[in-house]
Length: 318
Ligand SMILES: [Fe+2]
Ligand SMILES: [Fe+2]
Image 1 (tube, rainbow, N blue to C red):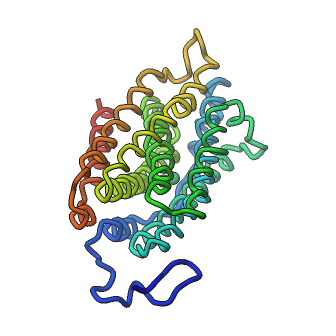
Image 2 (cartoon, protein in one colour):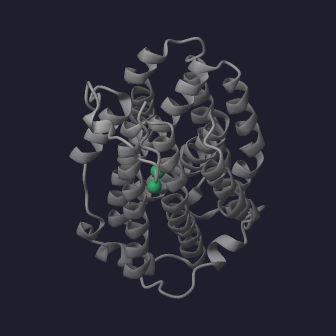
Image 3 (cartoon, rainbow, N blue to C red):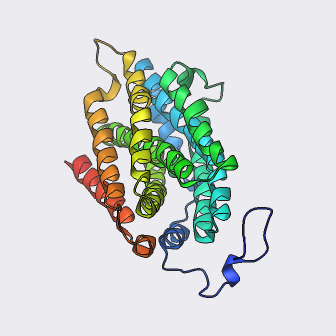
């Protein structure tokens, strides 16, 4: 058996018999991503700058806090996915490695998009104050996320991959980012403001559905191979539930007793996050006892994300 582990190559996955298995789930995501390429620099933020200037102080603060959480979050995930790329090579999974290189590139583009927005609305000073008040945010992005991802450098075992994927794909992307996108869409759509951000969110959402589907797929294949891995999924979700909810609620603490700007409803946001998390957990659970070869070509994790998206569109239209 030849190895493609980083620094230890003695062969090439793409030269092996059967080639790259284009029908495998990671390559299916890769092909889809290539077809959906977009350039953050093409987005016009000139109306966003006018809308931002016309906001009340409270609205401006809330908008900056949400955007700064995204900007710092996108930078964090750009960096912290890289150990997972190497872990896929160590496991001999070049199709996953190919997909994850696209995934890292997309996260870098998301970082660029939010930074361009801040520059366009004139917020070029230091922005740390918009995230540092949020202890739960700092706990997740400076500790839980990096700790669980960099653990893969020394030990890319299935257990560590699941802990990394649950933290990254299911909590940070699937709960925090998804809830944040929903908040953006509600604010922008209800007022008809920030058309540039609306475009950014649409493109990023398109990318993120593939990212989360890959996370579900990765957990599914480990759970199918070893049933005990389902407990690891559940355990890691439980560990992160409280800090994840803390990230969402901290932004509202400021408005305790009063109305948060844009009429954003905290219980609606929390309910939204929990519903998606529970249903994705169900998708992972359905892989218990499943055939590994079937999991590798099963597109159901992608179908689930498309279903969530369709539900969001319906909700926002109504
Ligand atoms: Fe992202
Ligand atoms: Fe992502």
